[in-house]
Amino acid sequence: MGSYFTISKQQDIPPSRWVGRCHHLEPQVSQNVHEYFLKYWPWRSERVRDKFPQQGLATWHCYNYPDSLDDRIEAGGFLSTILFLVDDELEHMSLEDGTKLINRIIGVVNKDFPPNPDVPEEWMMHDIWERLRAIDAKLAHDIEEPAFAFWRSQVAAERLRPQTLKSYLAYRELDIASGLLLALQRWSLGQYLSPAELSLTHQLEKNYSNCITCINDVCSYDKEVLAAKTLHPEGGSLCSAVQVLADETALPPAMAKRVVWCMIREWETAHEQILAELARQGSLSEGLVGYVDGIKAQLSGTESWSRATLRYWID
Image 1: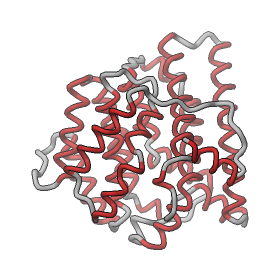
Image 2 (image 1 turned 120 degrees about the vertical axis):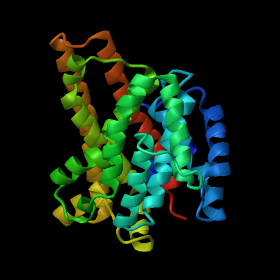
Image 3 (image 1 turned 60 degrees about the vertical axis):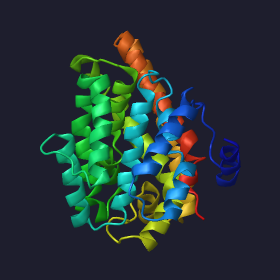
Image 4 (image 1 turned 135 degrees about the horizontal axis):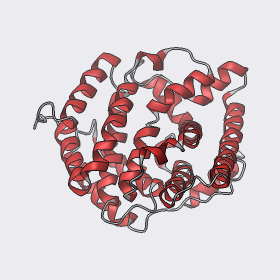
């Protein structure tokens, strides 16, 4: 993580009181996940394939879920990695072609039809989902609808329309997959929460969605700008809170980035305030304490990974 501190100094990022953590099995998880995808994924070129391990996509999963149960961390890492790779595929496609791919993937996961053995995106997604179900079928089922909503949002025409920051963040609740990431957290940590318990977390989850969206957007902005210039004009279109804020305020992107970082720090403070209010009301069950701790770990872990990964570096 040495590059993390270099990037921090260059971008003048306000410090966080939170510190990201990584799951202790990360080295083995990353090795196993990398070997699988290097062997089977349909890479666009040898250059893209060679750069894949350097991005640390399975490492992201280990930072996002540092308290995952040991027998679930690797299976979850497979899912997180294929979500990244499908997202990369969509950047090279029109919305129409991307919709066809997403509809096939959803149909496979939903068991509407068997995967095509000649299409790795289909049979690999099927195999990965079956791993999740074999470990915990109930919580794996709870991931499905948020995943479908996420995939559909990735090929929605809405991503091409000009938006305000408010409408953009509402759209990104689906596109950043906050519901999917939270469901994956519950699966990863074996967190069984009642509807009554989850009903208490809506404000916290909304705050989380805004925060993790902007962490992703500010760290990946330079990469997304390049994608908008060089990839498909629809699939690679620029979709970023940094750009929305810059357009609305006439600030240069570099200044808009600094504003976004300040917003992220305020959402961290808001998380702590919401949590304190729930505690004051006596609303925090033991299960909810673990759940909200997991949300905090996701935010701090995603930031730590995002500020170091080569995925967001420009060659």
